[in-house]
Image 1 (cartoon, rainbow, N blue to C red):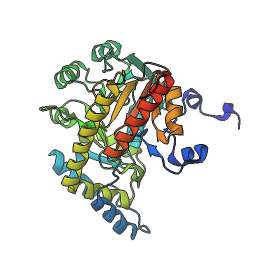
Image 2 (image 1 turned 45 degrees about the horizontal axis):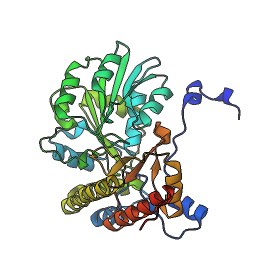
Image 3 (image 1 turned 60 degrees about the vertical axis):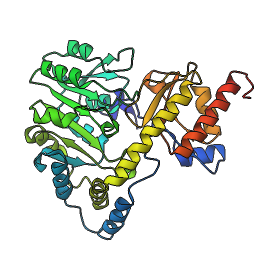
Image 4 (image 1 turned 120 degrees about the vertical axis):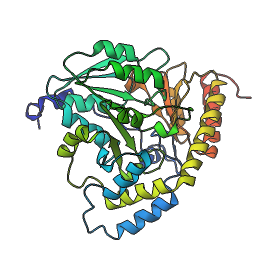
Length: 372
C-alpha cells in the first residue's frame, strides 16, 4: 500500500523503537539467561496480592469490565483526597497521554515541551495536526522552564513536563514549577507526566495533585507499570478537575481496562509493605550503581526515578553490543540525540552487582587495559 493513501500527518511520525525484548536477544545471541535493564520495569514483578487478584478476576474474563473502573477510582480518590470524578483510568499512561492529545489538540495548535523526553508528546501532537515546539534541556539535563515560557503564544494549547523526566531521571524543583504554573496563561493545560513520581524521596516535594487542588489547569498522569510492576497489565490514570477530564472521557474507548488489571491495581495499592520494599531497594540500587559507575569515569546526573542516564564518555553502541553479548539489555539513547549515553534500569541487588562487574570488564577491554 502506498503512502498517498495514508493520513498526511502519519508520514510525519517517527516509529517508536522500544528496548529489545528478552526473546529477541535470546534468539539472536543464543543465550539462555537475559537480564533486561532497558525498560524501567520492576525487577521483582507485581505484589503477590496483585497476582492473586488477577487470578481471581480471570475467572470472570467472559464478562466485560465495569467501564469506569469505579472501585479503583474510589480507592485513588481516597488516596489523594479528591472526588473519584477527578480520576480517569485507562489502558496505560501512554494511552492517557494519547487521549489528552485527541481531546485537546486542533490542527495548528502548538504544544510545548523539552527534549530529550518521552516521545509520545510529539507523536500525539503530530497525529492531531498540532505543532510540537521542542525546547532544549538545560546543561544539567533539567526542563528549561524559562525557555518553555518564551515559546508560549496565543496558539499554545498544551505544555508537557515529564517529572521525573524520562530518560534523564531529573526533576523540576517544586518552587520553580509553581512559579512556572503561575505564569502559564489560562488558555493552556499543563500536563505533568508523573509516571516516576513515586520514586522521588525529597522531603516536602510537591506533586501534581497539590497544584490541581490549588486550581491550576493541570493534568497529572500516573502508571501502575513501574513501581507496581504491572507493565503487561496496561493500566494508568489521570488526575484533574472534572471539567478538564470531560473531553478525555468523550474520546476514551468504552472498556479500556481489563478486569484483571483493575483488580491488580486495587490490590497493589493495598499492599503498602511491598511498595515500601520496592522503594527501599530501588534507592539502594541507585546509590550502588551511581557510585560504582562514576568510579569508572562515567558521568550520571542524580536520578529520582528507577533508572540512570549514563554518559559513557565514548560512543555507546559498542558498549551496548558487548552488554547484549553478555546477556544484558540496556537502552541506547542515540534516538534521543545522545549517542554517548545509555539508560539503565535499577535491577535487583544481584542483577546490579553482575551488571557492574560486566561493565568493568567491557570498559577495560575497550580501553585496551588489563582488568587486573
